[in-house]
Amino acid sequence: MPALEINQLTKTYANGFSALKGINLTVKSGDFFALLGSNGAGKSTTIGIITSLVNKSSGQVKIFGHDLDTQPGLAKTYVGLVPQEFNFNIFEPIIEILINQAGYYGIPREEATERAEKYLKLLNLWQFRRTIGKNLSGGMKRRLMIARALIHHPKLLILDEPTAGVDVEIRHSMWHFLRKINKEGITIILTTHYIEEAEELCDQIAIIKEGEIIENTSMKELLSRIKKETLVFEIKDHSTGIPPHIEEYQLNLVNTNVLEIKITKNQSINHLINTLCQHKIEIISMRNKNNRLEQLFIDLVKSNTPYMGKL
Image 1 (cartoon, one colour):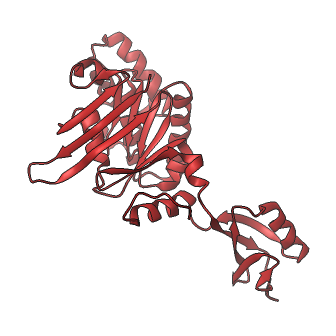
Image 2 (cartoon, rainbow, N blue to C red):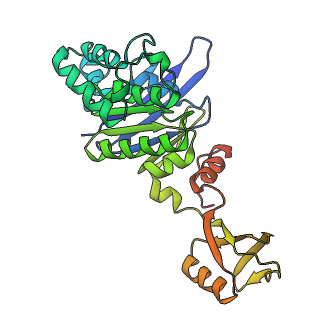
Image 3 (cartoon, one colour):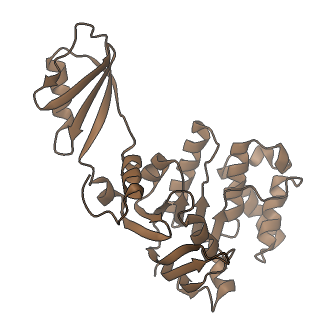
């Protein structure tokens, strides 16, 4: 049974703006699903409808088979939401924030306390359990929001910009936690402006533009469309210069320590590295110049029609 089924979903606001134009979307149980789009594309409206914060104009939403129109109470018990904005009581100790949230789902206080302890420990917040919300750092607040969303054991977790404003170390620790709970069976829908985050975490992806789904495929399939990418090599000082072309590769010596090389999807990186070594070029490190998914995303949302070709 799919975790989420959306059929012909529309939303038109009172001012006449059409935020969603009959979108269809299916998220399989156990997916780690990216929903990407520019600001105003319809992501937040879609999430708002799924979580019953926004009223749809027409269409159908089912969460684990439960229709949001006919079984709203039951459908909502399957969903945990981590919104963009902090919306907890900043004057409560964080363990009480979690226990009180559990109470909204009828969870007895003793059990809620056990669950709160579990998630605070998993998210490295246990030592701050008596700290009031307003005294937490931004990264701690983000992790608290995730703990609160999980306190009633939802089967579908929706993350709306979950790592916005946190440092790299905290972001990676949150990635590790999210991978863990996804492997344990929780379906996750992620919206993010950190495109590398979607590529790192998600196995399925949908891109929404002006209220319409223009892509809905696997991350692997979408990335396979990349025809060419640029690799950046940090090299040992090579002030004598490098030939502008080494066999089939297009090179650009940015400075004596940085070399950029364009490579097609059919060319071997191992062969490239061996070729550089044969030319006495000592490699210190290598990285992609641009995030692969980021460039695809930019090209897709700039297009006036759904993207069907290869880059």
